Length: 187
Image (tube, rainbow, N blue to C red; front, side):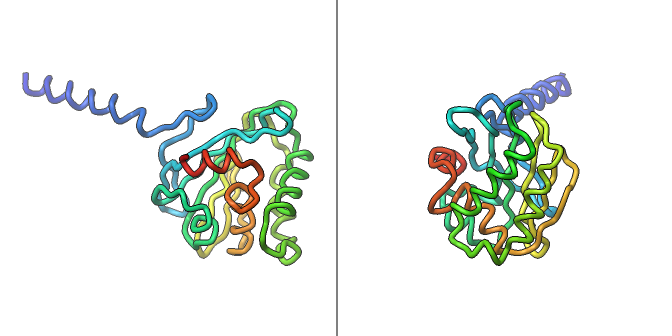
């Protein structure tokens, strides 16, 4: 009898804590936790990136601790992960790459000419992109931004200045989409 009660309690705890481990953003289910460079990061917030009313991707921000301080997130040398799920058949490798090139140019407070090789390497990772692909853009201190598609590492792009420029796209002073920034910051 005690064993049965214990099993019932443990099953109940699994049910209660299971949904807390995941977040649903714009119909896309994101894990509550991800690993980046051996460290566990937790879901901070997420939202949909749109362009002229068309959904391009759904993005989720993961940090060591929840934070709404965009400047600190962008400027720190702490692990960060932005997970993108492509959610439009209209998105192609070329327009995703050109969209990111434009975003780097418009949203970075850094001299992007100095990090052009890193930016070029980054946009090249979108070759072969398909609808529903999941990209992880995980900054690992001392290593760089590890770009993965569907859990397969495509590239590691070094440099903290590249990290700042990349995450500045969503969290900088001129974000690519203001409401997406707010939602990624958990607001």
